[in-house]
Image 1 (cartoon, rainbow, N blue to C red):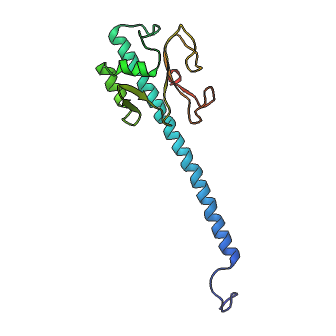
Image 2 (image 1 turned 90 degrees about the horizontal axis):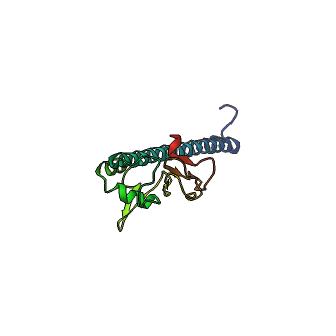
Image 3 (image 1 turned 180 degrees about the horizontal axis):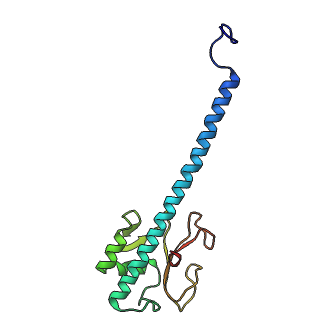
Length: 161
């Protein structure tokens, strides 16, 4: 009957080792899952910022407005989206980000990043900072990234894409 004699089954130590190994594998799997999820959200955010920049430039080209000049009457993302959604080509570009990212409520449009936070639009100079982001010669879009904090390493800018 071997070393175990008449007794069958596992010892307490063997069960604890197996449970420990399962817990370790689950922990590793969870870390990989979170990493993949964050990578997907960042990729979605980059796409959203690229499409917003493309839609804005398409509109500027259509009305022959140089990139370094502000769009008249547009100071923030809401104002910009209201203008872009009236322009057919720009609207078509923006709609490619999906209904969960481009939403409308009572005539006001909203664009959110991969973490469901509002995208920030910074019009071209001159003027003060916008939400703490400096104006540049041309406009750009910003996501505050997964931590939602301004000025941290995870911020994503359309001019870096």
